[in-house]
Length: 271
Image (cartoon, rainbow, N blue to C red; front, side, top):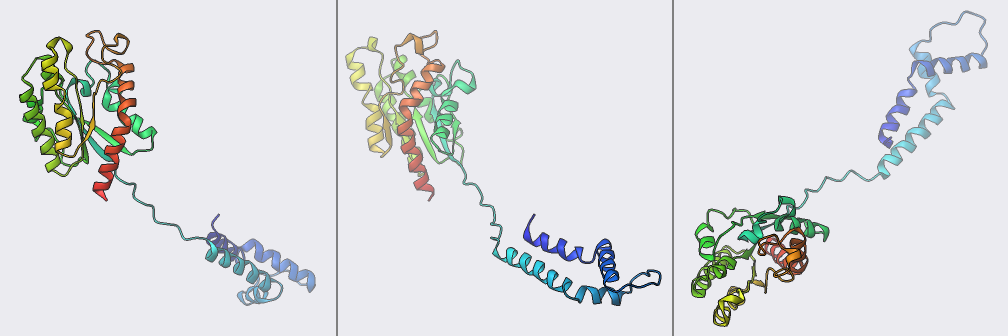
């Protein structure tokens, strides 16, 4: 019970009908009266309540309640929870969670891992299976929400699988990252390796693209999105390309420190 409420109840109790009767009974014992007991007049009640020891007792109770109320801290106004950092996952099927239930996909697992590390983050899935870097660029404006705080870009895997000219991939990825940076957003670029059956010359032209683009636009860089998972049958689905749930967990675990840098950059941009 709050002290202020206690004071009101105590003050009301002095006016309680039952207590008035008990006070009158006490008065009767002190001054025997052979006549039949009559209903007390208002003047009698006021006299009894103002007499010692009742008045002294009431004063002590009220004073104690008031002192307690004054000493109690005032209720603080509830603080509005900080809005979560919103990170856009802009990629292809690897980020989209191809072949997996939503709860096991990259976006959901990354968001859960960030929460476990104490980060209030929403990861928005804007990835499309099958997209090349050029296709990502084509849909960038209409598939990007207006209220995001940071972006992870993972494009280029389909370019390599199709053997597209690395120069096209470089130009498109450069435009994608440049567009996000022009919006004032921190960006993380996830790199990709070329299939070895395309030959050393293709790999030499393709693989530096991601680091170069990240450096040009002052973006964070993670060398290989599928690090620790590519080529391991136990961590991939039947097609040998897309990670299974266990593979996603490894990707998230290894990528997490770099994503935390992205979160820090996003927070700095909001402050």
